[in-house]
Image 1 (cartoon, rainbow, N blue to C red):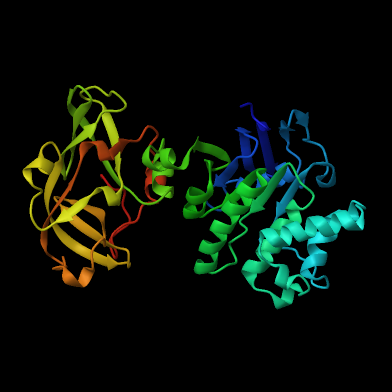
Image 2: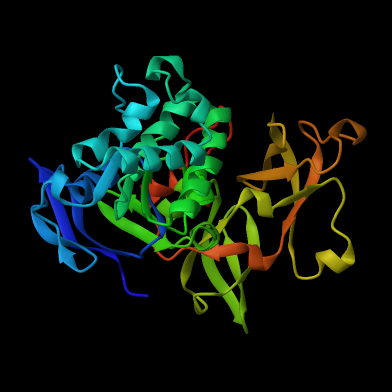
Length: 387
């Protein structure tokens, strides 16, 4: 399938600041696509250029084969939903949804039919004659979404639309958004700094950093196979290990890490003996047990005698900080069984941590500053793991 929306080497500067730096992306028709990154990475500026609210300094934007770079917002079939919903306070829910169709001067019967269909889709027929001040934040968000969809745009842009909602409502609205996207089938482009939102909704994600796309891929590939230390640290949490290849045989190698020990790893980059490497191991891949793993699991895995230095209970899982040698490592233990029936692991306990060589991933582009995004033990000095 050819790309429906094409961003070709687009750049935008504000004074000395380069907000978007020669970004090129191809987005498919009907795709749920997310722009993910921290504040100031350029994602909202890029979205505003797609919506026509900013003009690129260089580069072009094409929609369904047509150059829309210089078109004003009202001449491109691209609608934007902002954080504040922008509903008209003196109009009812029904009137708000009907507004774009009234501006387009559609017949009243067609307007009523379209509005009824939208109210049915978001299950708000009973609230049709209420004003925005009389409905909840989640209901306002639903009204804003269908108002933007009622006149069948080609693309819907969503600029951190759930930022103002509380956690429970945000989780509910994620499901609502997914359902609405499946029902209408148009291209959604979603801007967020929240990794969980992007991972749960998107067909693909562009992770942005300092005005550029750091990695573009499906959510699972971005999480499991990050191309850089920034992506590994920004998407979830991780442990970085720095070392040198001391042996390589077949698909696997041994990495010697100063102050920690040797690590067996899948050699996906086909590195040779003597080369330096940075390895990312996600906390949930690391097992924490009071006894060594059984022989059938212990064969070939990385096993280290360790001491528990801190514990953070978080409901569905417990996060452990474990020290082995000179290194502190974070690990997650899910609570698949009723926790109070188990003998708990506690502070200063002697434990074993272990993981399979396949569960580490070699980082291609490593930066000390980006690696500093990973969590460090409470009250510990900020330092890059693996140093």
